[in-house]
Length: 391
Ligand SMILES: Cc1ncc(COP(=O)(O)O)c(C=O)c1O
Image (cartoon, rainbow, N blue to C red; front, side):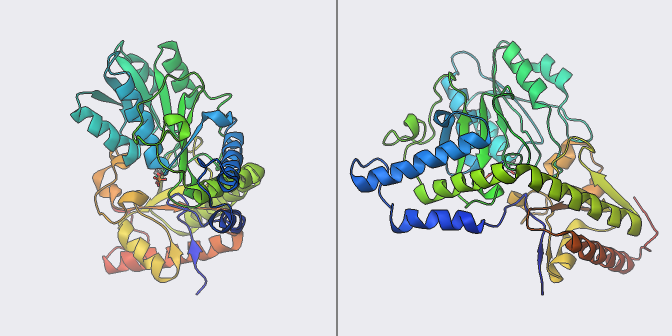
């Protein structure tokens, strides 16, 4: 059976060229980049190149890139690192309920340490209310952490406005850009962000590696991992050289294909949406209609449980997700949909389709066919006709 992978917001396949680039770091240049001998220096050269490649993708200086074990650690380092470094200045942190658990749970930990965490409201598309944000900033606020793109519904946040508000009030701004880097243009020369998280496995690189961009001049953060002074003392531990090399190569490829990849997935998504709308009644789409990740389609069908639909599709080799990737084993309703005030009965009826560069236009027809068949079948089993659109 020819399978169709439509879960690229959860993770992406490793690009062949990325894998090729990584292998010499296991076989030949396996030295410790902190060693002064030739083997160590060879590994250091690999790290330096990767740092340049990642920096180039986001318009940064190589010295602004700190390698981490992934998006989760980058979020933790930015948020806890700033909070703890500035706790004498203030203990007030602003975030939102549509953030990834890597942000939400870090904030929750900080709350237990005595920090005050406040959540800026979002509209029904999951977009931040900038007027509310402006009112929430106090003299005690040290950090605003708001995502760039939402992993579930794909909504993009107005991070230019957010960053400008933060700057005007002298507050540091961190954005989780794990879902946007490599998918859309992200340029730290024009975005008023102080810190930005990215992850390799969301852009055809290996898992377990990522980076935190920290703008030049940002005061030192308190590290999460103390060790031998690696990464300018921001993150101790011998660097994951093969992984970092893979991230670097993935960043280089993403940069070279950014526009064509973006246009490709956008075209596929439009085609798929048209197929679905013309064939299947009782469909709803979520996320912002304009400010959205080009590859993401978050949708629900009346009377059709998302988990059941996902399983029907899985049986015919089509892989989609329900809820966030990290909690997809659970059947709890999505916090993101809750923050968007989506009615409870709809929350369990959603699936996420996230496209990638390997998907093809002809696959979209097969996906629409499979969706139509599955929706009809599920509705007939639950006693609902195809035309019925119960709430
Ligand atoms: C928005 C966002 N932030 C952070 C993460 C965590 O990244 P990682 O899997 O590299 O730890 C994810 C992964 O799903 C994500 O979508």
